[in-house]
Length: 372
Ligand code: ATP
Ligand code: MG
Image 1 (cartoon, rainbow, N blue to C red):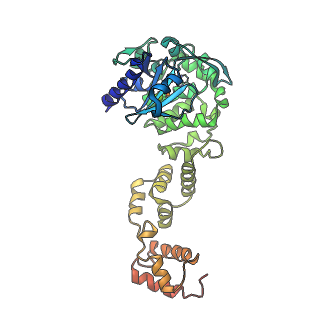
Image 2 (image 1 turned 120 degrees about the vertical axis):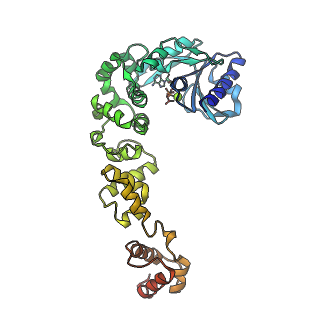
Image 3 (image 1 turned 135 degrees about the vertical axis):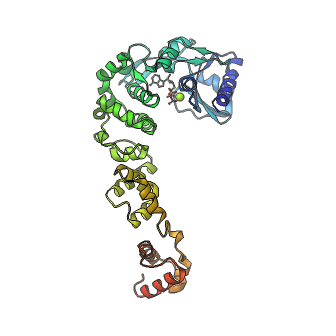
């Protein structure tokens, strides 16, 4: 698979070089390729301007999000093409106020964050490594391009990126990086929660999430990241489980789906996971994550879930049409009440989940007078 993606990537940059532009694979894809890791998100650096890139790839270009970079989808792979540039005058330690397109690869590499992210590959598959990236990759070291203090002061997100790479690859920091993190860490407070969340998501989603959390704590960044509960993340290493423990819904931006899961997990944390209604109402996933946070045995939760008489309303052996027929009534809000009642009765095994039994139960309990 890695080989296949590489072939497509080389084919892709050949389209630029055939049009007489310089073009190289760079960044995460080359780094990951050399580490033997698959990646489908490919960064290209070129002297073609966004306008020229769009002329070549036309309809395959996606509407661009970032200034000066064009996204192209080719054979189902995403290519992020960025024009060689120098960035200057950083405002607020995060955004370059001026971006100038240039014609020189070397200059472009100098503006990048870490040496391991500056390794390039040309259309023949040859490595171009001006800044010693391969050497650091083999020594497993995160080193900034130039002075770490300067680079972190320009853009404090690089601190979190350094932690992300150290976590994912189990790399060490160069001494200069370590020192600069402690000197520059307050600049993290100026970053948007959106950018911080993007990096934290990658750290927490890593299979080495615990090491990443330990690293953040060791560096004392829980304070700047406003994650006061970071030290409480002990028994869960799932992304959503970690965010549930951190409980920062009021600060960090989450999707609606994430928000709902986190809220449910926090609710279930205060309930009994082995209670049939809790299992039924919140489902196996939420119960497992909440159970994991509480240090429970997930197998026990899964077994209890699998032993539920019903796992969803459609498992009840009576339909709403049948209920309406039994009571000779039109649809109405009363159906919800009946459902909740019979779900509880069936889950706690007071009533068997059989059509006749449920019919008798409904007739004897809902004789018409109590219904609205
Ligand atoms: P991945 O794609 O695996 O998340 P990546 O290193 O490719 O990792 P991207 O965000 O895709 O990260 O960025 C592509 C390249 O752009 C990086 O490898 C790096 O060379 C450069 N880069 C990205 N963000 C920064 C930054 N904040 N400062 C300097 N260079 C950066
Ligand atoms: Mg990338």
